[in-house]
Length: 91
Image 1 (cartoon, one colour):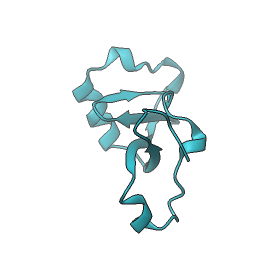
Image 2 (tube, one colour):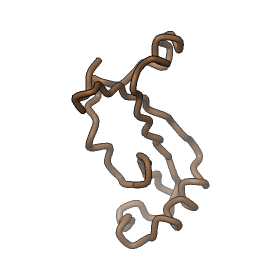
Image 3 (cartoon, rainbow, N blue to C red):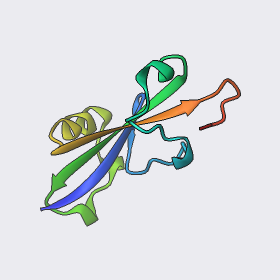
């Protein structure tokens, strides 16, 4: 079995986390009181075991099938990103 990573952001699932920069990633150890006043986007990463990762493409599956596949993930990681009012990622 090989592992793949899928990323869910709002109503889309893809193999790449391509739209938010790593520099805007919030540390999960940050004080939650401060992050309550920020516009935060959450991307959920799913680590999924499949027989042949090289042949897997998201385009072959519907959104519902991808959600079902994500529900079988052996590991789930949430990434928190700060977004300011000008739609630019910021730290």
